Length: 220
View 1 (cartoon, rainbow, N blue to C red):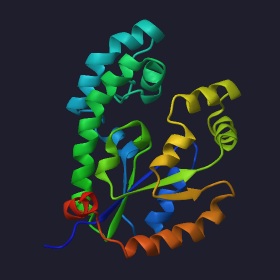
View 2 (view 1 turned 180 degrees about the vertical axis):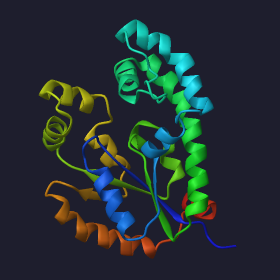
View 3 (view 1 turned 180 degrees about the horizontal axis):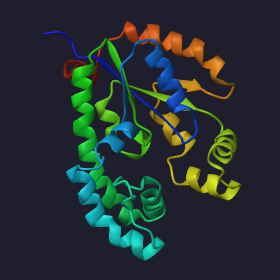
């Protein structure tokens, strides 16, 4: 039986450049499995999970914002849902309880289909979850918080206060770096990413997955 692919959990704060880094790995032929893309897929119109989300959160959205969660085209208003759970821990936990199991199942399906010597699994909230054990290594895309704030203001039209609130709602930079096996510093533009990504690509190609036997040796 052939060994399963090495799994790299790629994470980073909002506007750190995760998508850009993942795209560069994809250009090298590496399978990329993106939790955000899966999150959109599992709540597509016609899915049971979309109906479950609407049943759980539609009344709350109407009461709090006066807007429906279902768009005119039948899709989920993800932006409104983010606003609903942003500063409400109880609603956020309820959403995660519905979404996370479905995302995990689909990610495993895609991983099994993708193959490859190694895979990149993009998990934006890896530091905020219990997902670390699913990966052989964690790759953190890092940048200074002032650069994150500036990117959010430029990209999403946020005020400084809104950008800071987004950062405060996530794990801290220090918490993410504490999980990291590898770090890519993304503070000098996309061209500067090519060399560190190429180096990591070669390194990952030469590594094998961390197995239960490895764990037993490590703990003996």
